[in-house]
Image (cartoon, rainbow, N blue to C red; front, side, top):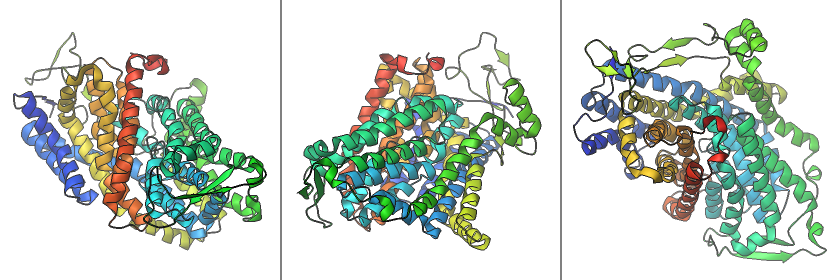
Length: 602
C-alpha cells in the first residue's frame, strides 16, 4: 500500500509539531527525568513513535511495523556487529594481560600529572573511543588515572571532558556511517566536513584539560606538550577524515598523538613537575586544585625519564600493541575499493572494479539486498519537504506526489562489513597471543552477555529512528526548526548536543536528528551535508553530561552516589564547547564556506 506523508495532520502547525515531538520527548523524559534504564526508555520512545505515526499521522500499521523491524535489524547489523567484535578484541587484550603493558608504557612517559592526563585521558582515551566507544574510553581512562593517583572526582571529570574530540567518529566511524545511512549523504562527505570542524576542538581540548586541573599557570608550564598532543591529533584527524575515511580517524590520530608525545617527552620535560598536594577525594577541582611544584635541577632535559624499555621489555610493548595493529590493518584493508568489491561481489566484482573503477552490483550470497515489504518504495515524501516536480504523477486516487519515493532495503553484507574485519583482527590477536580456542570462545560468550542490553538498546533506538523517518514526524519537526532562520547553523550543533546529552550516544543522536537536520537545511537553502555533520560534531559536546557517561565515570572511579557532583563539574564545560562549535558551523555556513569540500558547496 502506497502512502503519502502528511506534515500537518492536526491542521495546526503547533499541535502537529507537539505530536511529532512526543516520541523524542518520551525518550528524553524517561532517560533524564525518570532515570529509566536505557533499553526501557528506548522501548517507551518506540511505542510512542508507533502510536503517533499510525494514530496521528495516518501511517499504515504494516508500514510502521516494517520500519521498526528494519531499524532494529540495522541496529544489530552492521552497528551491533561492530561493537561486539571491537569489545571482543579489547577483552582478549585484558585476558592476556597485554592491556596492562600498554597502561605501563603510557604511564611511565612522565611523572608530571598534566602530561599523564594528556596521554591517558586525551590520546589513549581517543584510541579506545575509536576501537570500541560507547562508554568504554571513559571507564578505562578514569580507572587508569585513578591507578596513577589522581583524585577520583578529577579522574572522572577529566576523562569526560577529554572524551569530546573523538566521539563524532566513534567506534570505527559508527556515528558518521550511521548518519550517512539516515540522511542518504555519503559518509565520505560527512567525514570530510567533520574533519574540517573538529580539529579546532582537538587543539583546544588538551589545553582545556590542563587549565581545568592546574589553572592557567599550569598551562604555561606544559604548553609545548599541549601543542604536540593536540596539534598532532588535529592534523591527523583532519587528513585521515578527508583523504581516507571515517573508520580509523580516531585510532590513527590517537596513535600519532601518543607516539609524538612519547618521542617529545624523551627530549623534553617541564621544568617543574606538577603533582597533587593533597591526594584525597575532597580535592578541589578547577582553578584551585591542590598542587605541589618540585623544581627539576639541570634544565629541561634533566627531568627526562628512564626509557620505558628498562621497565617493560620492548618486546612486551610491541606484543601488547600488536592487537591494535591487527585492527588497523584489517579495517584499512576492508576499506580498499578492490577488497571491498571482492568481499561484496566475489572475484568477478573485483575484476570489474579494477578494470573500470565502478562498484559492481552486490552478490546475492555475499551481500544480499532485501527490499523491506510494505515499506520499500511505498512511502512518499512530498512538498514542502521535497521540491514540487514540474510533472506530477498520479498515484491511483491518493493524490499527487514528488518524483522520489523512499527506498527501504536491508543489505546483509556479512563478509564486507567492518565488523567482520574487526572479527578477523580479534582472531589474529587470539592466535598471536596464544589464546586457546576454548578460552577465546568463552571470552566471546562473556562479551555477548556483557553487551546484551546495549545491543537491545541500540536496536530499539534505530527502530525509533526509522519509524520517525518513514512516518514523517521528523519532517514535521524539521519544518518547525526552519523558523530559526539565518541563525539555524548555530543551533544545528546545539540540537546534536541535546540529543547526545539525553541519549548518551552520538550514533543515537544522529539517528534521531540527522534527517531533521537535512530537511531543515533544505527549507532554509543551507548546505544539508554541513547541517548533518554539525549534528555529529556538536553532539560530541553533550557526551560528558549524558546520564550513562556520568554513571560509567562514577562507577569506574568508585564514586557511586556522586553523580550530581560530577555532573555539576562538567556541565558548563559541555555548554561552552557546544557554543564554540555552533560558532564554527555558523561561520562555515556564511563566511567560511570555502573551508567545505567544493563538491558539496551549495
